[in-house]
Amino acid sequence: MSKDYYKTLGIDRNASQEEIKKAFRKKAHEFHPDKKGGDEAKFKEINEAYQILGNEQKKKQYDQFGEAAFSGQGFGGTGMNWEDFARAAQGGFSGNGTGFNINIDDLGDIFGGLGDIFGFNSAHGHNNIRRGDDIKISLSIDFKESVFGVEKQVSLYKINKCGKCHGNGAEPGTPIETCKICKGSGYVISLQRTILGNFQTRSTCSNCQGQGKVATKKCSACSGSGLEKTTSDINVKIPAGISDGQTIRLNGQGNASTSGVNGDLYIIIKVKSDSHFTRKGDDILSVTEVSFAQAALGDKIPVLTIDGSITLKIPAGTQSGTVFKLRGKGSYSIHGRGRGDHLVEVIVKTPQRLSRQQKKLFEELKNI
Image (tube, rainbow, N blue to C red; front, side, top):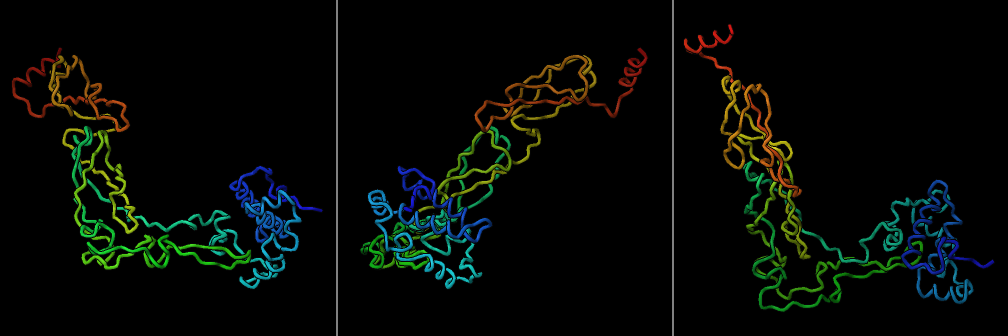
């Protein structure tokens, strides 16, 4: 009976290579012999199907001539039969009697290039571009600056591109040549023999560190690294409404790297306390005192806000602890939703020392 590789992988005949790859990955995880409920025979069929359909040329031959196009080629046209596969697995790894002692989670590391198929090793096939390290600092600002926003300048002693060679690692005026090891590609290709056949893998060229070019004469300032530690002045725009403990990230303002991809700068904001105000969300809180007479008779008193002093009307009979709301006098919202309110708590102050006249007046009030 002829084999239907499309049915084996559970895909349509018009499936793309990406869809074929995803289907194989899913089936391989499901039927791997080392997993509970795995099926060695089914695992073989899935691999065989993928060896054909996962190759554009072989897929065309299969679509035109069927399985007969690969008769005599063994395991999926790879030149290996299943006995070779099992024997290789048993010989290459500590077997458990079945020829399979492979942790499915380690396939990317064990099989090298095959890790791309299973999705464990997506870095294969690309240059290993190493970012520069991130930097984290703290920055203190005043309470008022946190409300309205501010622009600050910070000085950092960090890794930057070399000022002499501008990061290319070559002594100025000397040529930069194409790397002879990788021919300018930045990576080297090697052939890796695995239990599923031969696979090509590529890694960053150690001669040029993935740059594809090398200096004929190294820069005398940075010894060819292209990097140096210098002081950088960085302008930081702190948004209005930022709160204590929030973090600002500046992309690319961290340490530089030989790849040209800088790390990021993380700035943790520390808001200094204020003697007049505290903050709750976008609202600003403050406390003011009034006398017995002002609370009883009512008055107009000056109140300090973040915008300056304003006049607050105290109604007659105001009780201690009453909170008055000054709309739109709070902090700006960091999310751009206008401003919060200023909440003023009024405390009625009890006099501690009274003159004779004051005592007499209070006695009269008590008797009324």
